[in-house]
Amino acid sequence: MGRAPCCSKVGLHRGPWTSREDALLTKYIQAHGEGQWRSLPKSAGLLRCGKSCRLRWMNYLRPDIKRGNITPEEDDLIIRMHSLLGNRWSLIAGRLPGRTDNEIKNYWNTHLIKKLKNQEQPEQEKKKKKKKQKNEKNKIKTKVSKDSEKKTLVYLPKAMRVKKSLSYVIPRTDNTINMEPNSVTTSQKEEEQRVETKEGENDGFGLFFGEQCHEDLVNNNDMECQTGFLEKLYEEYLQLLKNEENHEKLLDSFAESLLV
DNA sequence: AACTTGGGCAACCGCGTCATT
DNA sequence: TAATGACGCGGTTGCCCAAGT
Image (cartoon, rainbow, N blue to C red; front, side, top):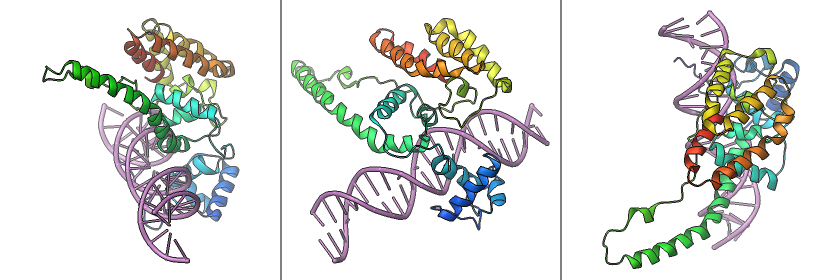
């Protein structure tokens, strides 16, 4: 696929933005709205590539961006969402009004990874003790069972792109995306069909995420769907964790119902 | 006070997806 | 149907600054 060079273009500014550039970009977007990123820099009088402008606006200049530290509630939400969705930062950000995907990604990489590692530490020590005891019992055997090396399985769905149609299923809570009811595209229709066919095999998860939520959204009535969404999401996740036998299998289908 | 180190974050890069021609 | 262009996303880089020595 052809791809035009972007930031590598000669003569374009790179690196940190100046306050003047910020002002130009903000002024332009306030007057003309978002979009047309490719042609925006020229129109706005900026010597930046469109991509850079978009990033600056989305991650820094947007008026609805929340400044300040991540609250414990947000922190908890990020962890829970990440355990479900993996590194789909834009999806996670969609559930945190005013937070950007970049911010959450950075927060995860700098704070939460460490936090989770620290939490894991005592568990690992327990495991080590158990392992030691087991090894002593099996001293006679020279070959150590591979099972003792197994780590706890944590479901981390492979990071994948989210189709636009999914933003219907898991709506953003901020006001930056304005989905119009009559803008249902072919892919959205496909999504509806897909959801219908999956309902039966997902132990009800397809029903909630596909039918109920989706219907609310199509009817432009997504507030109800949004308010209970995470609570239900989390409850169902916990249910899955309780059901150890089918836990992995169910999680897979659960994740699929969210993501495919 | 000078230097080093490491954390935090803004910005860049490359690629996948989608819409248009 | 294939080619192209624009957009959006996640991974990575590199700069700045505070803390430590």
